Length: 199
Image (cartoon, rainbow, N blue to C red; front, side):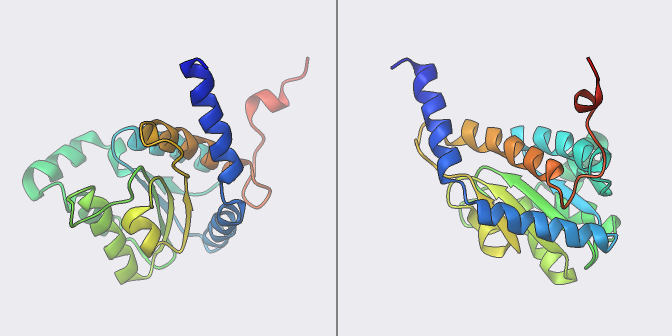
């Protein structure tokens, strides 16, 4: 088979193995946060940070949920990284935003964070802050889900089907899952443009 055929076969296997019950738990939790007037804070690093920016747009515009991504403010992100350190960059941002029990973190990550291995310790710090103030934690993560999966109130783990393509599949399926969520009847408030255009 060609590489494209193998890659897409892997993607098909991931879809087959996704835990739809976990996705529905995320949708239900998001609906509760929305009903309570809570906010979503999307946290991700690298490609996941870019996914967070896109997700913020969709959840605000389609689902009418107030949400933000700290990585969208590059000036504050780099200032805090330089002055306070990478590990605390998200937690300190969330403190200024007065993260509360009505709010939730939405983590998008390949590994989910692991302090012992110094992998995304900033996600771990943010989740620990969320737990301290009573905010919910939602995750869409790859591999074994890391700290996010262990601490989350609702989490979807993107199954690993090939050790060589964990990152691209994890980040691609973050997009598939958040698009599913903003289209979900529990959350969707507004029709998207191309579904309203008549021929």
